[in-house]
Image (cartoon, rainbow, N blue to C red; front, side, top):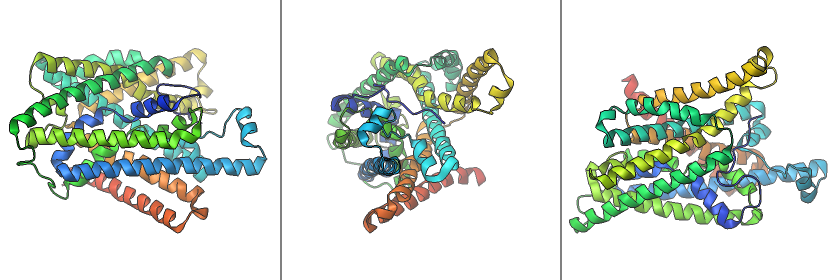
Amino acid sequence: MAPELKVPLLEGRGATPAQTLGNILVSIVGTGVLGLPFAFRAAGWLAGALGVAAAGAATFYCMLLLLDCRDKLREQETEEDGLGDERRLNRGDGGNYTYGDLGERGFGPVGRYFTEAIIIIGQTGGSVAYLVFIGQNLSSVLPALSPPAVVLALLLPAEVALSFVRSLSALAPFSILADACTVLAVAAVVKEDVQLLAERGRPFAGRSAFAGLWGVPFACGVAVFCFEGFCLTLALEASMSNRGRFRPVLFQAIVGVTIVYISFGVCGYLAYGDDTRDIVTLNLPDNWSTAAVKVVLCVGLALTFAVMMYPIHEIVEARLLAPGGWVRRRCGGVVQRAALHLSRVAVVAALAAIACFVPAFGDFVAFVGSTVCALLSFVLPALFHLRFVGPTASPWARAVDYFLLLAGLVFAGHGMYTVLAPIYN
């Protein structure tokens, strides 16, 4: 059984609404936000805003679906063993479930393996995006380190060393630091945007509200990627001292983040127009303050890269040491520990190698968002809800589930097509 994904700022239970709000923001906000202006360039400022709003609303609704599935499973277990909620909490499990648990309860071991595989691929995509972002930004500040592969080669030993830290509590400050650096970068971009818009006088002149049909899926893919942290929904809710207040706190967080995303994307596109880069920090002027912002942001992301890798390492090691597994059967204690260390080195090195071949940050983020993130955020929650709650749900609720399921699959299929079609041609 794979370990539960943990809450970045608070492990265990007893979180207040304010702490939970902070956990949600840390879980959701990431580097993807700096690719939103480029997405708005592809779709148009109005189409991009509507796409981000739709992604935020759908994400919030699907998070509620996961909570409904968890509540249904609690009811079923209470009926099966006759334990009340208080006795269940005293027993120690609290009726908590991970994303993988839902897959196993609904579809057996295959459901768990598939769900965990999607989680690993999603975390891998986010981790690679971190490395691509760091490589491109540091290369723009220090041309001597160009191409970005040189930056990643120099960064690899430090990332390998951080991967040996096995305590999420020790890594959590790095995640907070990365979010603080992201806020700093967003503030620097907004400051530059406001100055450029003030100079232009007519901000919407020459800017497309709707740039074309094919740009909309691209913008939606970036938007879905920006609402990362979906797999932590159940853990975030379980961390609260008063779980009944989680839904309104979640609603406040999603609405606030959506407003910030739309504002940032619109302002960035209006400021730079067709010159908007896939990482908007690359549009900033070449001066010492911009260079400092980029370097600080990259340092923060490099330190928090280990947090992104944490679930991947945990799942990989759980499989290596599974009962009956090759490592457990053939290796002793010292060799087992060496194998675990080597697995971490191999995973980090493999992701760094993949990042060297990613041509563009924006295209990669849109691809991950429209494929893996769409499966995690829309398809699996709708499928689980139909499995657990569907028989007793209203026809309207089932219709929405089927719509999300089919729309998510079509969205993922389109994302795969946009990548594979040029290769085939």
